[in-house]
Image: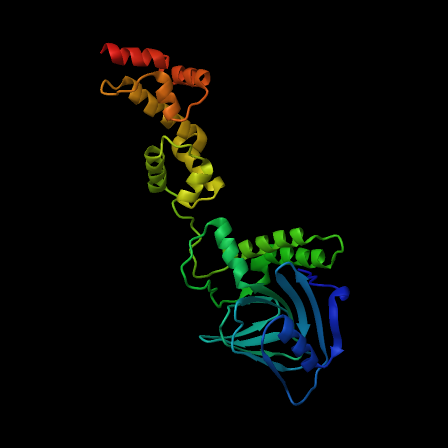
Length: 320
């Protein structure tokens, strides 16, 4: 797959001193120290662009180099090896990765990375807050622990859609026509893709997806039946997205949340009007109590549901 991560207009260094490049990387991409093989001083190159909350970086030291970091604080690094190979000495494993492999580095993990002389990488710096925002947007349940990705390498072929997306972001970041809003949109898509494509310590199953959830929602509706309940309230209560909420009601009730709530209100009105023990003074008072303010429309819905007008239901109660 031809890879086009950043073009010449994003070039910051070309044929430069590796330590000068390292200083720039330290300031913009991640804290580290650099040492080179004594046999070569290297000829480094670097391209860099901001893309919303992301930093995009294409890097080559042009020499056998060793990079050591005590940890990346509150950032994740997406590292794509484009040429050569890299050895990653991580807290619990050592990985020798050649061109065509990808690894995501977690915050705070100490790193010891050795570059081959011909190694070139594409690196994406991703703030931890962006993953937190993705979890909030998709209502994924997360513990107090930091999101941690498994330290396993992936082949580019396994991540084709992610790579295509990042190439597009590079193009957009270099375009004069791109707006900050567009880049922020791409940022959200990238974080969502990472969370859904890679292995990590977070379960992505939305809470409250099955029958027990629907039963809790029905109970919530019944407990608050006299209130004006919105789909947004149900979404907040169940911690489901609106789309998931609508799918849940379609699966379990073959209707929308709004129609389901209205039907439940009608059932409560009917139970009140036909209950001999009820002390409701008239139909209007009961209808208003359950939020039906358009009395003509209420009467029609009541008749289509129960086969009689609400006034007829109340008369049957009074005559019983």
